[in-house]
Amino acid sequence: MPIYEYSCRACEHAFELLIRGETTPACPACDSEDLERLLSLPRVHSEGRKARSLNAAKKRDAAQGSERVRTQREYELNHDDH
Ligand SMILES: [Zn+2]
Image 1 (cartoon, rainbow, N blue to C red):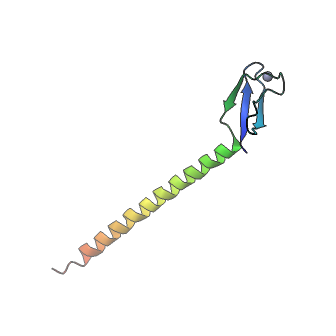
Image 2 (cartoon, rainbow, N blue to C red):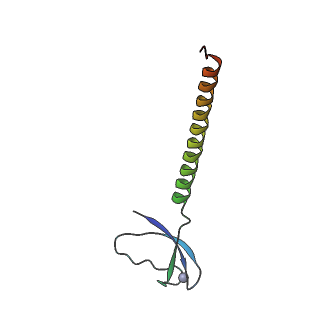
Image 3 (spheres, rainbow, N blue to C red):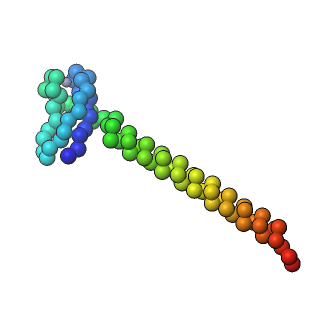
């Protein structure tokens, strides 16, 4: 079940709501339904961290790959008997 973070446009109260089915979210402070859904959820933040560490791992693998290619080329240069 998704938890959304809302900011109330009427009173600027910020809160999190668990949305069940067709429930229309309403501000717990002033009961207004004029809400803005925010994207600053902890779950979203942790997914962002995961994506960043995945990118770091890809960069590391790419660096190791080019290192392997260079080592192979040096080996061939040093062992060119022709
Ligand atoms: Zn409100």
